[in-house]
Length: 406
Image (cartoon, rainbow, N blue to C red; front, side):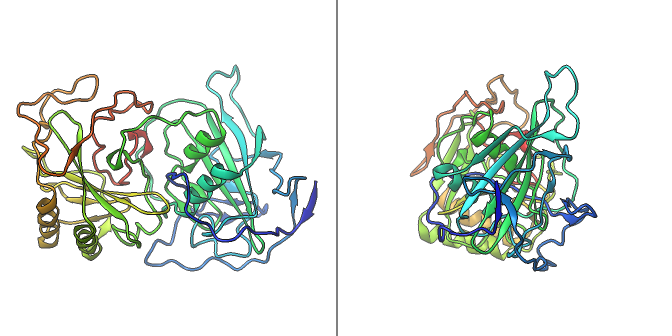
């Protein structure tokens, strides 16, 4: 083991092979030198660049990667050993480039089968120097993780094993540590000390480096799982030129997917970016006799996670993204008309119908899949314990994953 400054950056990232949903948490310096999660985050409108810090010599192992701390004290997994150095850490969890070395350190903090509860200090269980597709997946997840804040979340209370992770990324001119926890409810934030993300990236790390199995999901864009994307706190449709797919639930719960042509997709993106927005509200406050006009927009980007936007006419608010929502009005009506021109409504599940054990909804009426739309066959093997046949409803987070994800 030695000490050195990082060197030998591998250059800019190319297209990533593995898409992962994302992670982070804003932190403040403590008297001990560690960086702990603060109580507030500046948010999109008031974001200030992170402090400029000189790159220091940090301990490394023989493989060139940073040395993992032998133990951690924080059971919540929200403390990094060093704040970001040599980079604007408040801009995103990791810089948008490939690090020279990236290590993943795992620390079990909860074991439900243990005879005695685990207590601090929590010892290092596993250190991995990421490479290949694993490296691409981690960098993509952290680079594009959505911004969060300290607003309390509504989370389930399931018990399960939990592992806190530290990710240490070294560049030719910077060092960044990220803290995240894989918790039983997929509800933990992530942080690099300056940037807070609401995405449960710890779950993705546990799938890549721990014992967690990646759940099977519905094929195609309507089955995409996303906890949001960097920039979704400033626009319902973050910057970029994503492919736009409309997802509609049918009577059986199987989604109908309609991928818009580039011209129609561009028009929808323009309409989304023009909507006046406020912070997302996770609830639909209106009882509605029909959900036939409900749909979900999935924005698939060339790099990084997709974005999911729920549109439910008659709800308040009717448009909900990962971090923002739009109130009812003529601009929302125009968006609905624009989408329905390319993806007509289909008979949807009966809101008052009975739900079977496989998640389908008993309702009268036939399923129509006119034109170029595709009805995706249900997949009843979702390891996340949710109904994969039915696209998840829009929530305040906009996540298209298991209900425990937010």
